[in-house]
Length: 619
Image (cartoon, rainbow, N blue to C red):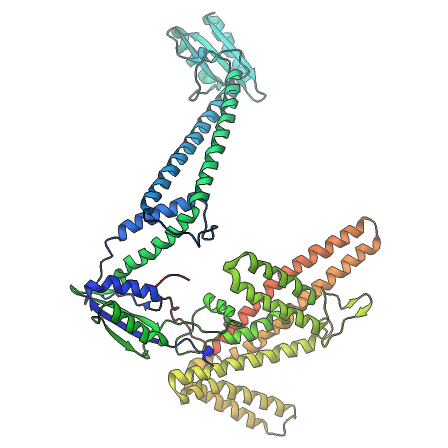
């Protein structure tokens, strides 16, 4: 079964004259087969120089992405797949950029105008109750003025002392509730006296920075500002619409151009990842094994037979990039390896086993026909409206079907075991057969953990040979067998002496010591905790069904009271089950994931290989 192993790969080193470098890079990009190994040892051979067009392409790419961001475009713009670029795309790009720049500058100027008007309006609101025109606040040769806040007692003191000094002044006060706004006019010859007088009174001066000193009242100017703001809003809306229309008109062009420039940028920058001498280039990487003859033939054609290819089988020490190769039915479960790590090239690919066990665990914990149906609908809609979450949605749709299946086995529909007075058919009642549920959970754990040891045996066989595989992984199974025989002998199920089982367990420990060293002995207690960890299959499912039963009972209690309590009962039912479904989905997902990563993977999986990423156009 080839899908249990990563795709077969070969190492390739391409050497050729420097003058053919560009043609080779273009062909490799077209073939999309070579996973490039970046050259880093510059002490022996230098890295190459990027193509002369790299800087210009980079500048154009920055412009395109800035315009896409400005227009709010995404990669699925209508018509982008059928749009073709004209020969004069650079001129078109510059024209779009210039038009967009002008529109953006006008919009920025409008925002500046709004800010200035707002600042002026705030100052005018302080003056709106003063019977003045704004021009009286401008600078005069013989008159000085001050504006600010003052408390009532301070105002009386100022008036009293000013009256004793001069009668050539004017004070206008407006009570704001907390303070008094005061506008004072006085001859400049008495201004120093006024300043000294105001210091101990708590006077807080207010400076006008945005006012226009025109011969109109504050209220008239506020009315003018409101009219101006209405005009600016209309102008802003028009400019924004023009910008949006430009984005719609040129969106396909920009998306296609970005894709094209991105392709050219990858080609132009590839020399930074390869080795070069004065006259030669060297490209190193990995290709799928079946592509070796094709790559060899195409390199010979584009270099007129001047390129030399060295194709090799992977060595034991090579860090081979991994390309997973799973059937369509199971490849969505590669999602879990993307989250965790790629298997090493010599390891088994665990995707198929996750496909078998993850939905089983999920369904066992969320085992309810109603909850499974709701979950399926949620993830079906997620898949339909969010293409990027396709694999995740596929996994949970299958897991939801598993929930429906287990719901039928448990005879549960939204926590109800009876509908219309009839008991739902079931093989096992989670609410009443807790012990049986626990035994099944632990039994699943024993099977799953030992499956991990069997897979580990295969990995060890490939990596270190038969003897190490038998000791390192077979030792665990022998220890388990010894423990089981000892327990069965103790309870007289088997007519054997206790020492037989103990001896078998000791043999298993010796095997572990030989295969895994002291680490295997130290991890022996972990075997029991790993198996018991599967009791969560029972515990999570039980908590979900108990919560569902409580929700149903409380809802029924309210509905039977009648009146407004019927509405309350229905709300309890809807809100309660919604929360329980969310908790059930999250809990089942996380705990199923833990059983894969911790209890299962720890028995055989090392991982850490780089993912196969071929140089070429992204699919």
